[in-house]
Length: 194
Image (cartoon, rainbow, N blue to C red):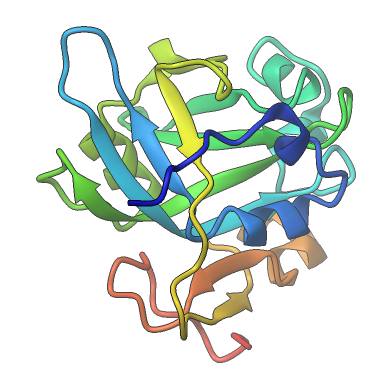
């Protein structure tokens, strides 16, 4: 059996957040909180948020209490609440100060998951991730990623991001990435998908 290695800080420091979003596809996300069973799944869908100049990114509002972690060291978890009830999890990427991150949108369950994982809110609910996980270090032992490759024959596609119509031209930027034909992708891509 192949030994799987935890991704290191250097992986997350990739200055190209769109590339990081693609590189995260196929990686295994592990959540192992004290007193809870280990939960694992393969990342099958992501969205890149490129920093303060990206009007769809939370960091476009600047450094705030909410976005502080996005401007910090790469390889940490940015969790926020939407609609007052759904948590969303992002991987902080890029160099310190970049304000960039990757939203995890879809997960293929592997172990310990018995709830739907298609969509960022469902993904967090299935993993038991909430705002108490804000700032978790992905290089530690509670939430981390294993360096697993894409499977043979899997291809990556891209489309516009979901739910960012307020962001002007940025709403159509092709920054959503997913594994083609994977049933755990959250939303059927629109006609602009490639």
